[in-house]
Image 1 (tube, one colour):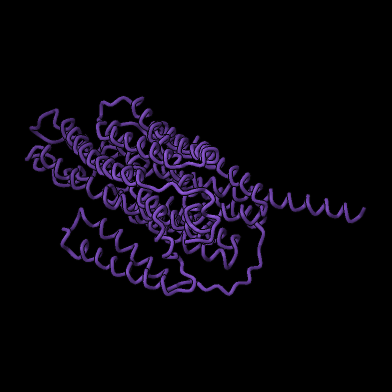
Image 2 (cartoon, rainbow, N blue to C red):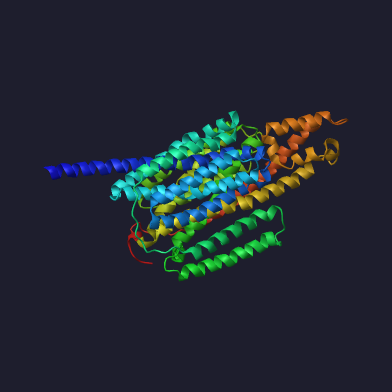
Length: 532
């Protein structure tokens, strides 16, 4: 009887420990989603206040580069040193970056803060799901609690963008960073107490050489594309960096082929199904970034909405992004088919991106909501389908690395897309503004005031706009409508730049759609076989 009671007590104790551990990763996963979605709303105002609109794409691509690198490295380290230690390390980076972001006085410092934050953010989501695997050994329990973890992202998608918009409009974007700090500290305490500390005895080695080549190759390609709006393609800043990137990618592939425990196994990239899904996923992020990061800029800069309204318009996209994976997974489980979901998802997302190319300052907000619903319906199922497909398309021994590779490609795409789209937008803006502004305007208002119009962030900064209006009012002998006409010129130039950006997103998505049409339909028991 005593043994029976002891067994019950042990089972109850294990259940309580698992519940505490789940609570820790639930809050941690929530804060990762809160930071990601909140930045999409706060970023235009941050760039406007810190005069950094010309570096707007860098604020997206450089942190994404850090996230792509750390996701692979921390995932590998967690296998050796334990999830708890790496999750705590990630939370410390996240907290430090949030504090630095809140106090940053220049946009360059703010970008640096986001990079530090990204060293934590990039690994937190994947580590949360890995912890669930450690807490629940039974596959049924693991599947159930993994599904429950997605509720955290759904809650965040429901409230984050509206809440952050209100914080930004009423208080300041700085409070958005500050809000993350106490929640992150709470998560650190919860992880320290709730996530079990595993004694990991492993002789596995870290492929540091491969990690170094991967970091150099990724950094060079992102920087090369980012410089295209300031330097010609034949310059060292562009062509030179791209060539350097190719060299390091080649060295990385050679290193991984020779490594006994590669950080990213090259054999994963020999599977046609994986390659097709990965290529389409990479291209899809041109549309994803266009909607999540640049459509708020359109709403706030072109249509003059506040951050709160832009968050409200974007909320359907974020909610569907969070929740569409559930019915997609159920449909795949029932039909054992995924290709039709791929084709439908990419078709709807492409149509939504095409619609954005026709938006202007007079487009009603309700139409923006409709397009966001379309975009969310299109993109929401893709991540879930990607994970399931790569798991079943490859032998079981590649399950972990195949999922990690998809996350890596997604993060690289998040970095590459703005590095290409941002310079295209900036170049179009500058050329269009030069044709719209009166030739003698610099003489009339002064060089200092004229330079401020080179940054479209002036449209979203109340202080800058008020100061410029005062400069115009003091200028002698000028057209009384010059100020309004000048502001309209800036708005029209920004609209032209964003239209080019949305067109790039549309053509990338169209190519992704054409690629995904060719994906093979593999049986869903293929991944259980140890075949190549």
